[in-house]
Amino acid sequence: MIRPGSALTKQKQKRLVAPKVAPGKRAEASKPDLHEFLNNCDYVGAITLLEFEKKTREERPNLLMWLAFSYFHNGDYKKALDAYEEASNKDKNPDMPLYKACCFYALCQYQEAEDVAKLAPDSPLKSRILFHTAHKRNDETSMMTQHQKLSDSKEDQLCLAAIQYLRSHFQDATDIYKRLLVEDREHWALNVYIAFCYYKLDYYDVALEILQTYLANYPHSITAVNLKACSHYQLYNGKAAESELKVLQQASNSGNIFQEHDLLQHNLVVFRNGENALQVLPPLLDIIPEARLNLVIFHLRTEEVMEAYNLIKDLEPAVPREYILKGVVFAALGQRTGSREHLKLAQQLFQLVGASASECDTIPGRQCMASCFFLLRQFEDVLVYLKSIKPYFTNDDDFNWNYGIACAAAGDYKEAKEALLQIQNEKYRAEFCYLSWLSRCYIMSNEPAQAWETYFRMDTSNESFNLLHLIANDCYKMGQFYYACKAFDVLERLDPDPEFWEGKRGAAVGVFQRCVAGKESYDKLQEVVNLLRSTNNPQVDYMINRVMKKWAKDNRVKLE
Image (cartoon, rainbow, N blue to C red; front, side):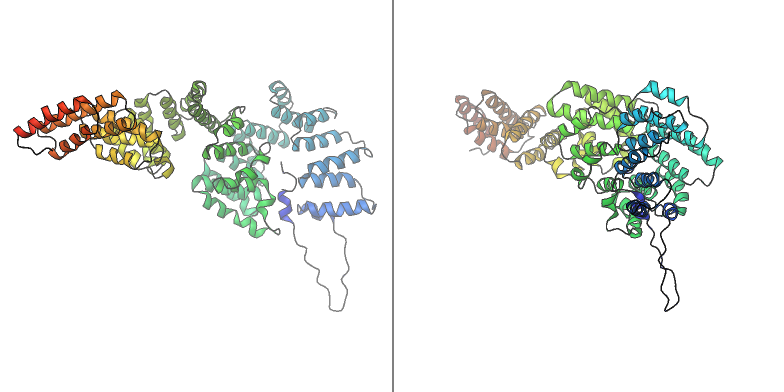
């Protein structure tokens, strides 16, 4: 439905060419023709004419009905409803409640639409309205009742196809539209409806091809051009999509068509990667279904997880994309708050998509299964799915993050290090999770100096203390005693815990042992001796003077 102030037809007004008259003669002013306005879809012109006639009390059959009709098609549903109310006082048309019901439906007042429609005598239009209101109210029983009343007429079949589309049964909707197109090849709008279905089925190139038939006849159709732009966005990027919309601005008589049309405003937010999302999307939540999903994505990108959760928690997913987005939000909230319940729900949502017959062999389906196993901490299984789609994500920071951590958790530290080093996002690279996993990969790949350098570049904080703890223990475990000793020395200075002295002492002995075996330079032994002297412990004197110095003297090694 078109919202007030956002009518497509406002952009289609034709400029009337002044009639040619002979020089010296005065042109006679002719009264505009209502049907000419309506044929040209110039509803603003029609409204202006009818309002004038109403004000001057000119006689025109069904003036209020025409005025309501024009208001409705211009997107001014409240004014259309008022006009029908006024007309009902003079005209006892039995279908008047149905026209009012259409206005209520367009205003998203579905219960009111149904109540008013029931006042009218039975008719195909009444069945169609009640079918749609039942769908909006999730009343399956009423839907079945109205479904059985539908005939094979074009209007009823279009109504059924629309319901199938709204219920995400895109293939069923496509079949109906194709059948109708065979019966009437010149019903051009059917091409747009079919293109919409193919777009929803992710066949963007097919949607573009079918759309071209309609655009050849109506090149400035906002709906068709917008769909073309969306297909370009899915196939290419936001810049390519936005360039497709320029044809609308060039053909428009108004200042800025994008500010006058809700759908274009909404999609520009998406094309521009969330720009003006908080201004544009909230008023559209109950009008454009995708607005809610895109606002959720915006909140996730800005790390406002609770806002994203509040928007999506009551959404009943109908298509894979909605299941995935809800799973991502639940996973983010679970990790943020430590809620096992939300992590479990996220894992189940990912599994539903990844294990479904229609999605199991798609890239999103495999990502879902990887996410499911990630939350279950089954990293070998995670890698099975991530490796199968790795060629499609060579420079994707999010993929490299997940792949790197999964490899590290599974013990493949060399592969993990390569993946983590490919991440370019500075925000990701500054996170403790990234730094700690990368440091572990360096240590396990026998590059402890790189891990020490990573710590050295950090500011003093709880996170740097925790990283130091990881380096100390991992280096000790891997026999890299020199860096373990350095790390335990700093830990001991920061926190005089006996455990850190024991670690430092053991690492110092390890360095000495490697020197004795000829596997470590004597310079490092000297450094370790200096580190030991910084500790006020009676064991230090024995270790240095009775053990290390004695060995150094016997082997002619200079040790101060």
